[in-house]
Image (cartoon, rainbow, N blue to C red; front, side, top):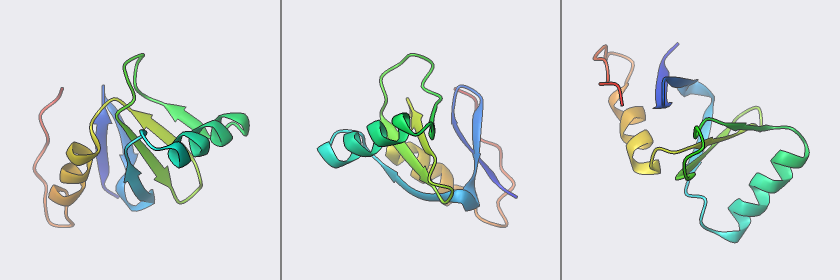
Length: 89
């Protein structure tokens, strides 16, 4: 099982990620609010501005302060044969 660093020492299982989006659009804001109302939001932004929203296969919504592109690059670089560790933030 591979984990992706999503900032501040927090990790998410890479095989559980469905999509990574930016939180700027109205539909994503509604999705976040609906998830908050039903208790499915995991906020790992540590009080900083949310820059990416990770949707998992269990319909949990993870809010991160790391940009979507950075998380996507980490996901791409952590292929099945890649054992390189990412530097800490």
